[in-house]
Image (cartoon, rainbow, N blue to C red; front, side):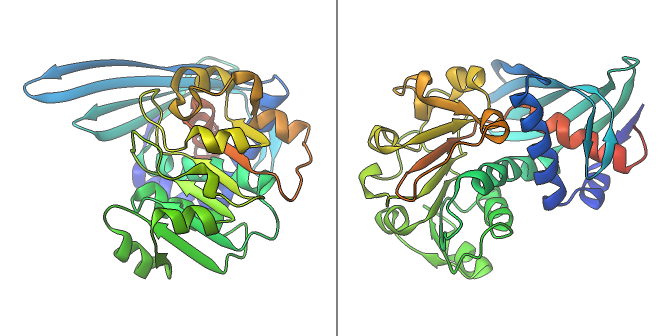
Length: 303
């Protein structure tokens, strides 16, 4: 068993490989071949610092992908938070022997995996003719999502709405800094990547046919989307219903009977009309981390 560093992860894991790995993992989950461990948290205040420790994980069956034949694995992701700053590790085990394969420093692929999961959903559910990408937020995840989604659709415009950093973001990505109403009303694909505790825009402004991905929060106390948007949505996709019920603040007033898991949609695609609004709510699940850890370990010759 060895430690895989951030530098090694960055050297062997690229956005396209991340998307392919997550598409295969979600499809496996949709077929009932993968099991997921829900996130568990413990919190404390010590010496004036807000502390938290969190853990989640998954069991993946063997799979044949563009990486070749991947072995069955078990894995956990554990991470610390101190005053809102995070550090991530993933431990990967062989399902055949139970032995530890590697522990990976996972800050880099935590950045990649959230955007890659959104890209899987957008590739499946966003209209092929989407031309305007609107992003709420200007942080790490907002940047990762623009990079990932530009690989899927030939966006002609990128709009950004952010409380801070919007102008720098616009310059970096050739985007236009706009207000919330403009971003919500003109985006064909809308990504919310903020820590907002309250809805960011009026859901009545969203145009028919839009795909909206809410990725910024994973607690029931925070939400980026309002009930007006959810009421208009023809389809609401989540990574895993169990986790969404526990952590998706955006969906707290929306019956889980309306939700469909991403894996189910990959296995049995559901046609969407050109006027349908589709919402994807992500809270991040261990399936994603274990899937990427397996690819990294394979590329480094460890499994």
